[in-house]
Image (cartoon, rainbow, N blue to C red):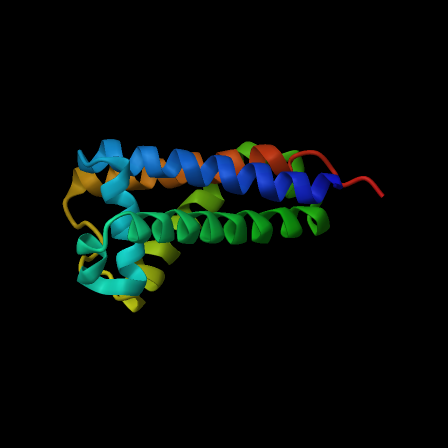
Length: 147
């Protein structure tokens, strides 16, 4: 596997998995409940009564979104070398973009029965989680792809 593929897989799986833990800590919920909440984007409220299959669906959706998010950054970084050269700043900026897209486009367009938090503390904590997500993805994308 080449460096680009490794960066996408490592960045996506690691950031996505840590994001589940961060969401559990922020919301004082179990990781399984977070996975049900993710699956509710497809299943709606039924996700919370669907048991383990819904949690597994949530995990699959989380990792699929995380890999897509990582692939977008990694592919951009192969073309724009300054993203690799200034990866901490680029990762933080990407984290802000992820936060905005997820909270104001993806979740509202899904079947999830909840909205983006409006209170200051949840907003800050969720934004910090996305900044970490962006940093992890950028960290794995920092090395140039080998030909």
